[in-house]
Length: 343
Image 1 (spheres, one colour):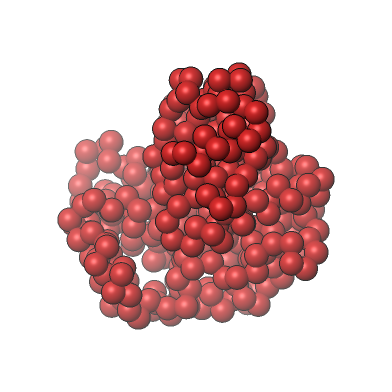
Image 2 (cartoon, one colour):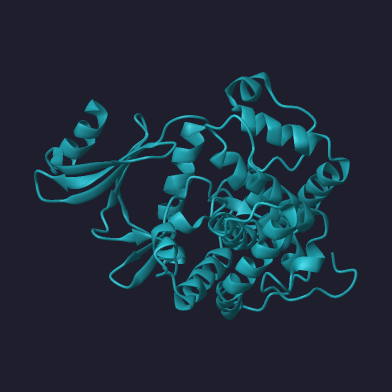
């Protein structure tokens, strides 16, 4: 893309032509070394809300020293007209997805992830420094209908998922209620797109990347997303058991989640190290957001499938329980059990 070459030349880095590797995602991403010997990770923000996502990605860099406790690849160049961002390349880094898959994501890493998110949530920000709009996803204002654009772009499996959600009045009510609760709490700087693949390990140090959804929001979004990542993995680890009945899936899922609970406890312990948690409803809201994160991951995984699988349906059932009765699942998710009536 010529606009990327223009950014490289403007900074005296030459061309991006050596060992270039492209990565999948909603944006165009490349990593490589320029002809001037500079290792870079280049992202061209594209798609829905691209201009807003570009501005949010830059807003983290502009927090400067206030965000020093949240290690992230440095943004070394940007171009608003072409929405190109250039970051330092963490050569040889591995993301959390890969580490977890290979059994190399440790409890210590989970604890540091909790401390990192805790530091983020405690960054003081001035008015106007960060986006204050409500994220468009998850749709916490109800699921009564899809837009024509959504309907025509979703796969058969995704439409099947929304069909199940829309017919479930208690679930729709729980999701809308979560949105109401979220709007009543004190908003803090929140990543709002926290997944394991956003964490990078480079030379033994943990980094957090991808700030396109950064804004002041409910901290439970981030806590719940991290928990939801492990719930999702617990559900999908069941596929290796060879069991197909609903009872076997749920029983196996519980065992898988129990085996991952130490990671959740380590994350929450690290999060608390950064300051006392005074919000008694943070834990149940986080459990509910973990349920939504599970639905979100099922939705994303269904992009090219015509039907939901039995495993998907089991995951939807677990997500429903988390959203409708989050207080009952705080303990299993490594969260403190809230006093009766706190929610």
